[in-house]
Length: 152
Image (cartoon, rainbow, N blue to C red; front, side):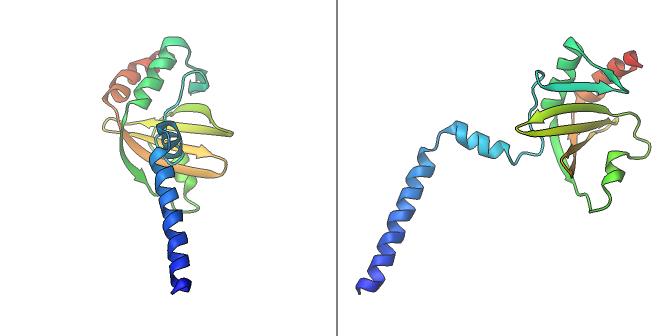
């Protein structure tokens, strides 16, 4: 009887401690853990460089494009099969992308933003990984087109 009771007692104590630890975890720590797994993560204008066709966006234009990007709605993740990364990095009939270089923790992240009439495709590249997803942003799709045309 003691052989069965001891493991159950230890398991009960362990699970109770785990429950207390999880329920007392501060929201900042939880948000940090969740942000590590976000596909469409927020970027700040302080550590981001936004370029279009080799020309840097500065000041209000840069902040505006970053805000449009941050508040865009996530539509879907595009699955990339190994070996097809270049098809997403340089899609046909896509035009020139907005390029956002930013730093997330120790990693340098490069975002290629391809703007279409009905959606926005984002290709996120860091280290040797490539992730692609689609967004919906009326602001980015409509308001950035005149902004980009002024740069060209």
